[in-house]
Each structure stands twice: as C-alpha cells, then as structure tokens.
Image 1 (cartoon, rainbow, N blue to C red):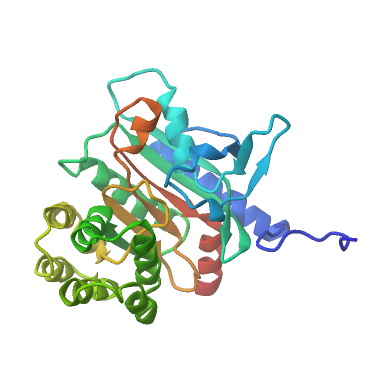
Image 2: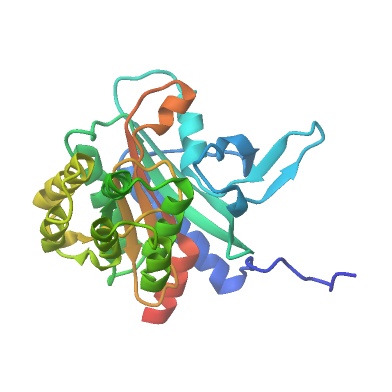
Length: 317
C-alpha cells in the first residue's frame, strides 16, 4: 500500500512563503513579457506523443500513457513544441507572433521524473536566419527577465546547433554516435567523449575532443574557426560573431552547448547562476519546426526554470 501523503520523486509541494515566491516570480515575468508585446498562450498539459517524437525529444525522457481510444499521450516535457503547434493554427499576420507562457513540464532525467515550472517566450516569424534581429530581441529579453527575478549574478552562454552539426557531418557520425558525443560533450566528460569517438580517425577525433573546452569570450570563436573547414560550422561561427558585435560582453560562448531537444537549428542559449544545479534558462533558434505544421516561419525563444531560479535566489540571499 502506498504511504499516506506520498508524492512522486522529482516533484514537490509548495506552500506558504515558498508558494508565494513561486507565484510572484511567475507574475513578474508575465509583466515583463507582456510589456514587450508578448501575448499569453495556454496549451494542454498532455499532448499526443507524436508531437514530441520524430527525433525531437527522446521517448525515454517522456512520461507517456494511453487514453481510452488507444492513443499514446505524453505529459508536456517542453513548451516550444506545443507553442509552435498552437501558433500554426493562428490566423496569418504580417507581424511576428510574440507568445509567452507559464506552466509545468514533466521529463524523465536519469530514470526519475522531474517536474518543473517554466515561464518563457517564443518569437515566431521574425527574420533571423540571415540577420540577427530576432536573436538580439530574445537575448535582450532573457537578460531583462533574469534581472527581474532578482538574480544579479548570472551568465548568458551561447552555442550554435550548426557548429556541432557541421562537425558531425565532417566526421560522418550516425545518429547513435552523435547522441553519445552530444551527451559527453554537454557533461564535459572527456573520458566518455573519448569512448564515443574511439573508432574515429585521428584528426577528426582530436577536433571533437576539443568541444568541451570551447567556452569563454569571443576568442573561442576564432579558435573554433581554425579547427574545421566545414562550411556549416563556419556559417554558425559567423552568426555568433554577428550577435557578439551587437551584444558584446553581455554574452559568452560555449560551443559544447548542445541541447537535448532535436529541433534547434541556430543559436542555442543557456543562463547559468551560482547555486542552481541546472541552467536557470534555456532556449535557442528553431527555424524548421513550424514547417511540420504547414507554416514555414523562423522562430527563436527561451524558457526560464522557476524552480531553479528559487534555488539560486536562496543561495545568494
């Protein structure tokens, strides 16, 4: 028999002061988003699982179940895919869609359920594949939003999905090899990365082994440029250089920043704060995702993990 009042591992109750802080964070961010012209959307907590499949999110990381009609459903592990689905059904307009949201996500991490409350934005339809206006809008809003939560000590780190994709194409990595390299690089686990690359040729192996070390200021981009001749990788570095030209030292770089979700095509983003066990903010550009729903629109956005924000604020108090 289950113990009375037990809740699943990876979830928690909030009450009293903690609940008030969580709701206050959500309200403060909603105010920032809406002041910048972002309109609130709400989507179901569960969706048909195929929304997240097709290489977008690893099924092992989803909480899945079957409804009475035999359809496979999943609790929302991510807000971007539901937001893209909802946006595709909106009336056509000339201006970009600026959408914001807040609510829980559910993901399996290391075999355990992880529930978190996210608040974020999606800028859909603004140009950005060639110029950087959409990326700059999102990065500026990310910085303002984190300051609005009360965080004063945070770092915005940028990577680029195209840089990793270019190196993988140059190395001829298949899907499983690529995922093993991604996981090891993201954890900056040199031993696991060496195992994942043990069958590679000497030159390309040495290049990929340097991925976890490519973080810091703009000098990282020049170091990376000298590591490869692949056109896609170089185009990614040029995009990051264009962002740096406008944002300067407001951003740093981590070319080993390779998100778990497979829909990113351009700049990737994470916000880090002392004391938080995970990034307090994640996001990036996903220009091909809306095409799945019949709308070919560029898009970029971010989500803030309010639970991690609360941990960081407690540590800094």
